[in-house]
Length: 126
Image (cartoon, rainbow, N blue to C red; front, side, top):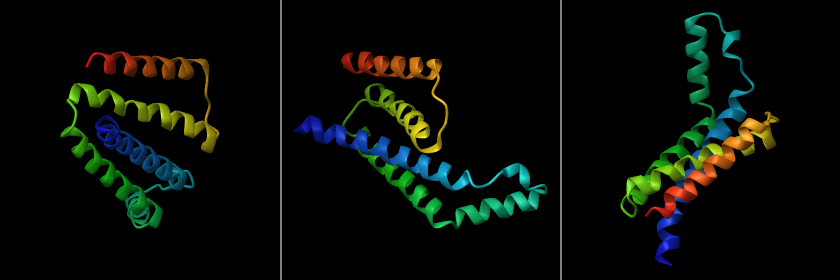
């Protein structure tokens, strides 16, 4: 049970961070920064996005991911816990293919497999 609880904080940190990134991509994909020519226009876009409720939720999720990460640091060595954060790259890649129709080629797939194998190898070293 202790194992599950201590890893809950790692997993929740990763999941909250991934969800945050997906929300930000979803909301920002409606805009093209290049459509805004002046520095002032770009600044106004950035401010308006910071006031967007979904972006506020995403930033809040990122904050709670950080809180969970801090708790995880009380339960695990950094050298053990940090490699698991790379799993967020795997999840973001998979969900970006599913939700945003991004490409998944053989290189990305091979990278995902190598990342998962690397996490397994590092976690066995503890």
